[in-house]
Image 1 (cartoon, rainbow, N blue to C red):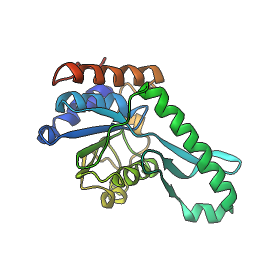
Image 2 (image 1 turned 180 degrees about the vertical axis):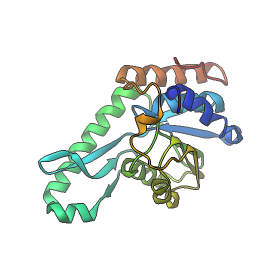
Image 3 (image 1 turned 30 degrees about the horizontal axis):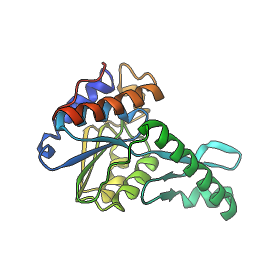
Length: 225
């Protein structure tokens, strides 16, 4: 049980300090991954950026994910073929859904970064952070998109995730750092005492603070608890 995302990030950072001198880049999945990633970036004196992933909703059932899409220099989509076949998802629908969600990804990237150019992954140790993983579809899309940016090493760092999901994601990365792998799993929020939704404003504040602090000193200030 973690107190909140900030506490989880500080604990996770302690397991990643060996990367401090390896030109690391910390990428967070917004919104909940940002407070966790901020603490890791602060501890490693590393740049903090985002990787925005959007779920692809099923026809007439937008909350039912048939895949996920991530944008960047190398847009990447991950699909659930079995579910798509079961629902009879057409190629035209899928193309429209991907295009629509890529536009939303681009909008969020612009809103969160405030005009800053995205950090480049090529040749760097990239640490991808979320506040927890359940099924792993969105994270898988993010990792595949980042991998196409040719990082030197790709690390997935999360406070909590089920063992079977980590096994699904293991081929996508060079290393997984996860503090807790409980079974049965349930929801990510059940492992936090405080799991209030992270706002867009908080995402922007933390990204701005990380950028500003790194430009003036080798360390980052603490986030709010």
